Image 1 (spheres, rainbow, N blue to C red):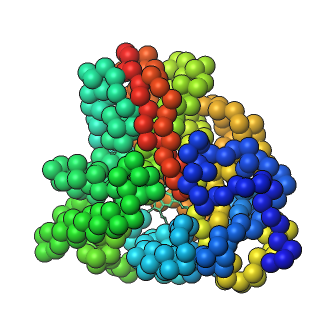
Image 2 (image 1 turned 90 degrees about the horizontal axis):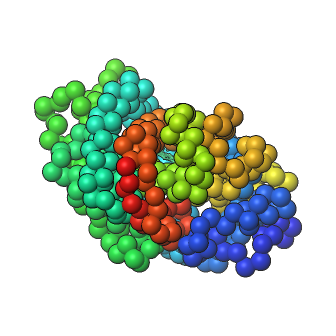
Length: 412
Ligand code: HEM
């Protein structure tokens, strides 16, 4: 490890959530990509004493697409903040998540859950998403002003997953509260703590288990029944496995899309010419893709090397942890032209916000794209005069690039 490149930016701690409270450290990321695209970051007390930081798009893709070397299972895909004991606990709790599986077990599992996300299912869901979006935006207009995160961005992703999976209407509010507690644990203002997150996860797990058990013996045409019912040769989930999958969907599909939508709105506020263009031309597909790149709702994920490997001129040893920074790679001019320009008509947009390809590429990417398209189309149609009342307040997290509050006036 003695020859490993060091961080080219003094005193930058990528583990400390405070590093991200003013937004992504974009200038530091640029220096890293230019001067030390793969470097060793100390994390005293943790497994291996630290991890490799990967910031260029090409390297993020290489890691993502080489799962036989870069394992999600060995140390989990989530970078933990504490010491090795915390890591072991987190690992034990999240072992069953597909995010933390490796091939071939991962592929077998993914084949089953993919049933919930086939393109026809998502297309059919779009009509409901449009109805939800209309209701959400109408309610906001009636309110006059408020917090965009709570009134608009948080609603659609949650409703989408509940609708997809078949959560009864009366349980949806509780699901929303629980998912907030599970993700906001780094941010004391959100009432979060690791303990509260665990309690919330247990309750969510119980709810999902209840849903699955209710279908036992009386399967229908819904997704839960499809995931639980064995189809020839392709396996099925047990109620317990379904509950774990449900919890993952709530975390993976809720916060991410919520923040894509909020960052998208903020980007339009900061680039009024793009908002005018959006309203006039509605380039829905390219705009949604650009919003997601710009937002980069997931800052990073972790892997662990299973063998020695050279990456970006650095010698990675078997057992080393490697953290891929999607948020840095999405501003890499080697991957996207003029990456610091928010351009909703961008056609070549090979971003890595949904992952760098490979087996774990975001399962919900098409659903997320549909949600972003539909909500902005609806906002542009119903309240084109929407304007900010205050600066956004950023979530304190080294993992989710989030906005926790954005005060706006819902002008039509
Ligand atoms: C803009 C919104 C979203 C972003 C930025 C995002 C981002 C990501 C990323 C970076 C990964 C890991 C990719 C990798 O390791 O290669 C991932 C995986 C995943 N995402 Fe998303 N996601 C979003 C929306 C959603 C939605 C709406 C759902 C479901 C309702 C979802 C479900 C999942 C699942 C289940 C996985 C794990 C896949 C696996 O391990 O095979 N995501 N997502």
